[in-house]
Length: 301
Ligand code: PEP
Ligand code: MN
Image (cartoon, rainbow, N blue to C red; front, side, top):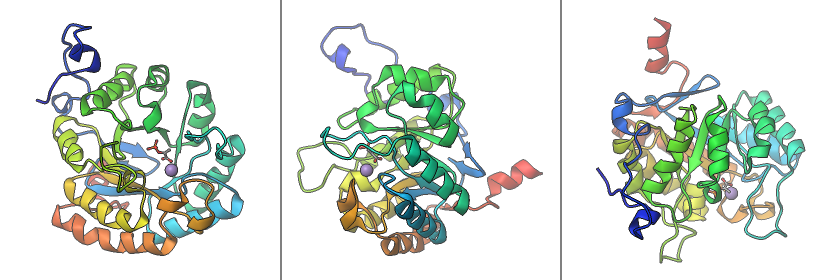
């Protein structure tokens, strides 16, 4: 079992605490499978969530949804509340953006994932989003984590910019402890000494948390690398490392995007990714999620 060093304990401010327990693999050795619409995250099927960083307007949302659905994505992503480094950057469309995302999702039969930045947004977000995303900058927003423990909606918990695995799992523990067991972890790259890429994708953490916990693990290769040329190879590597799915940014016109255009895949490159994933998944005894996945058939019998 990994180290139990928390930031407080490392400085002698608190007695050593027991490590996370509800998230631990022993709590559910068979693993957790989360239902999102008709899609299952954490079963044998590998789930691809794709869409723009931010919902910008009706046409961009529709074009992206149509493209990712046609390529075989399972869940539509799109931020409407954006945690931006600068207060002068585009902050997202808010509720009107959520309506655009919901309409596009309905038209193309895709459930939605969108970020909730604050507990006060939860009633609205829970009404529209099938998965509530907690951003890296909010991983230790304990008020939000507690509030998410009280909702009956799947949560995708991103790893903080500089969070240890222990801190990440403790954050997940807050949500489970509140009574919501539908938590998926998302590795989105961490800050290291390496400036060549936006972040450093910690794929060893993916294999590690898969061993250590029963929670599904998703990889976000877009924020992890910041470079569309690296998104396809790192997505394939994530599939090989045992991830249960991907969260990928796609934009029909990346050069015009209001947010994270530099890392967005074009629809063509996303199609290429979807074409190349099955061979890698097959090598690790997985496949892209499809309705007739064996886990579903078991439920039917
Ligand atoms: C996002 O998914 O657009 C996002 C803001 O990601 P992160 O929280 O990982 O930076
Ligand atoms: Mn983004």
